[in-house]
Image 1: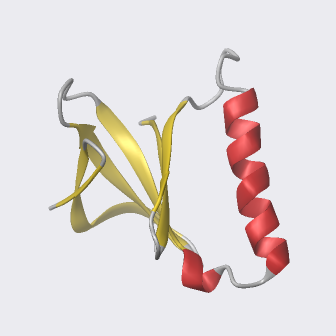
Image 2 (image 1 turned 180 degrees about the horizontal axis):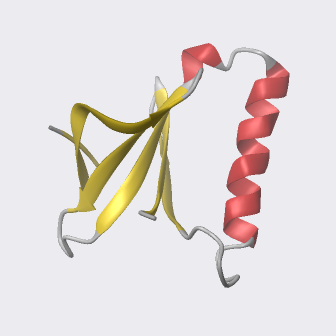
Image 3 (image 1 turned 90 degrees about the vertical axis):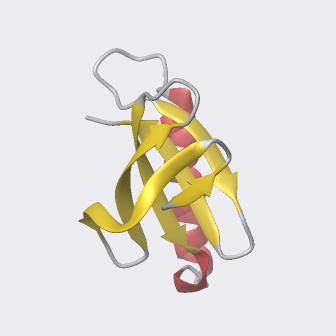
Length: 90
Protein backbone atom coordinates (compact mmCIF):
# COMPACT_ATOMS: atom_id res chain seq x y z
CA UNK A 1 0.00 0.00 0.00
CA UNK A 2 1.11 3.53 -0.67
CA UNK A 3 -0.18 6.78 0.81
CA UNK A 4 -0.11 10.26 -0.73
CA UNK A 5 -1.50 13.20 1.26
CA UNK A 6 -4.35 11.34 2.95
CA UNK A 7 -5.16 8.93 0.13
CA UNK A 8 -4.17 5.26 0.06
CA UNK A 9 -3.84 2.87 -2.87
CA UNK A 10 -2.40 -0.57 -3.52
CA UNK A 11 0.69 -0.56 -5.73
CA UNK A 12 0.39 -3.17 -8.45
CA UNK A 13 -3.41 -3.10 -8.56
CA UNK A 14 -4.24 -0.66 -11.33
CA UNK A 15 -7.41 0.08 -13.26
CA UNK A 16 -5.69 1.71 -16.22
CA UNK A 17 -2.25 2.26 -17.69
CA UNK A 18 -0.75 4.50 -20.35
CA UNK A 19 2.67 5.60 -21.56
CA UNK A 20 3.45 7.92 -18.66
CA UNK A 21 0.86 7.07 -16.03
CA UNK A 22 -0.96 4.39 -14.12
CA UNK A 23 -4.43 4.76 -12.60
CA UNK A 24 -5.15 3.06 -9.29
CA UNK A 25 -8.33 2.63 -7.28
CA UNK A 26 -7.75 4.35 -3.95
CA UNK A 27 -9.49 5.50 -0.80
CA UNK A 28 -9.59 8.78 1.07
CA UNK A 29 -8.21 7.83 4.48
CA UNK A 30 -10.64 9.88 6.60
CA UNK A 31 -13.91 9.59 4.67
CA UNK A 32 -13.25 6.13 3.15
CA UNK A 33 -14.58 7.57 -0.13
CA UNK A 34 -13.35 5.58 -3.14
CA UNK A 35 -11.24 7.64 -5.55
CA UNK A 36 -9.18 7.24 -8.67
CA UNK A 37 -5.47 8.09 -8.35
CA UNK A 38 -3.59 8.81 -11.56
CA UNK A 39 0.16 8.53 -10.93
CA UNK A 40 2.10 10.34 -13.66
CA UNK A 41 5.79 9.51 -13.96
CA UNK A 42 7.44 12.87 -14.60
CA UNK A 43 10.64 11.36 -16.02
CA UNK A 44 8.54 10.25 -19.01
CA UNK A 45 7.33 13.82 -19.60
CA UNK A 46 10.68 15.47 -20.29
CA UNK A 47 9.41 16.86 -23.60
CA UNK A 48 8.02 20.40 -23.09
CA UNK A 49 4.96 19.55 -25.17
CA UNK A 50 4.03 16.64 -22.88
CA UNK A 51 4.55 18.85 -19.81
CA UNK A 52 2.25 21.46 -21.35
CA UNK A 53 -0.38 18.79 -22.08
CA UNK A 54 -0.32 17.72 -18.43
CA UNK A 55 -0.79 21.33 -17.32
CA UNK A 56 -3.70 21.69 -19.75
CA UNK A 57 -5.30 18.49 -18.40
CA UNK A 58 -5.16 19.86 -14.85
CA UNK A 59 -6.51 23.27 -15.91
CA UNK A 60 -9.36 21.63 -17.84
CA UNK A 61 -10.31 19.40 -14.90
CA UNK A 62 -10.22 22.35 -12.49
CA UNK A 63 -12.28 24.53 -14.83
CA UNK A 64 -14.93 21.88 -15.43
CA UNK A 65 -14.98 20.66 -11.83
CA UNK A 66 -18.50 21.97 -11.17
CA UNK A 67 -19.99 20.91 -14.51
CA UNK A 68 -22.58 18.16 -14.48
CA UNK A 69 -21.50 14.81 -16.02
CA UNK A 70 -17.78 15.68 -15.85
CA UNK A 71 -15.22 13.81 -13.76
CA UNK A 72 -14.57 15.65 -10.46
CA UNK A 73 -10.98 16.54 -9.59
CA UNK A 74 -10.41 16.36 -5.83
CA UNK A 75 -6.69 17.13 -5.49
CA UNK A 76 -3.39 17.43 -7.34
CA UNK A 77 -0.08 16.62 -5.66
CA UNK A 78 3.44 16.75 -7.04
CA UNK A 79 6.58 15.10 -5.75
CA UNK A 80 10.06 15.05 -7.23
CA UNK A 81 9.26 12.00 -9.36
CA UNK A 82 5.46 11.93 -9.81
CA UNK A 83 2.34 14.02 -10.18
CA UNK A 84 -0.86 12.63 -8.64
CA UNK A 85 -4.34 13.51 -9.89
CA UNK A 86 -7.01 12.46 -7.39
CA UNK A 87 -10.44 12.22 -9.01
CA UNK A 88 -13.78 10.66 -8.29
CA UNK A 89 -13.99 6.98 -9.14
CA UNK A 90 -16.40 6.30 -11.99
